[in-house]
Image 1 (cartoon, helix red, strand yellow):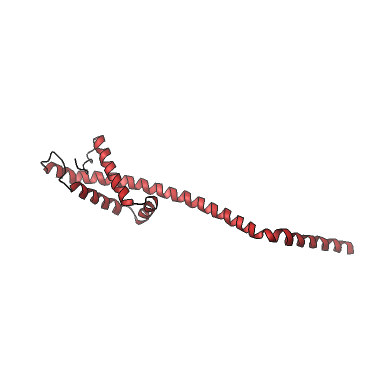
Image 2 (cartoon, one colour; image 1 turned 45 degrees about the horizontal axis):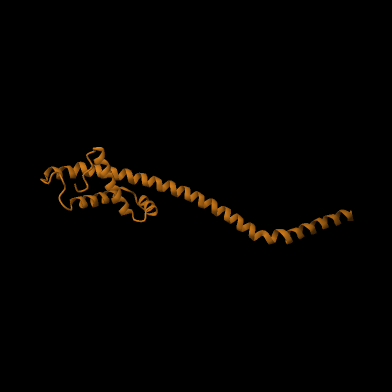
Length: 153
């Protein structure tokens, strides 16, 4: 009976020694490793979600710009051009006024959450929107769609 107790005490002593000598000293490193793995996974998920969110709002932005340009063309620009005697060109400064109106309409059509996501994607959101408006106008002119009238000439 004494031998069993001795063996039990010996095994307990060895287990305590292993814990004290091996496991306890590496706990901070194990903790750091677990935290690093969890942080990496969280960043991966956030990055994926963030990219999906950005892509979603960029698509919304592009669709909205196209719709706004077409809407302005149909309601405002066509009427102005028919009234001008300038060979169908907009009066000086009118193109900029219409682009700024389009910018305002695009920004008001996108939710605050969408604006925040787009601002994280683009450094100067207004400049990007104005550039996309110009590009949409050029594309619609090239394709013969009625919306291509927001730029002079």
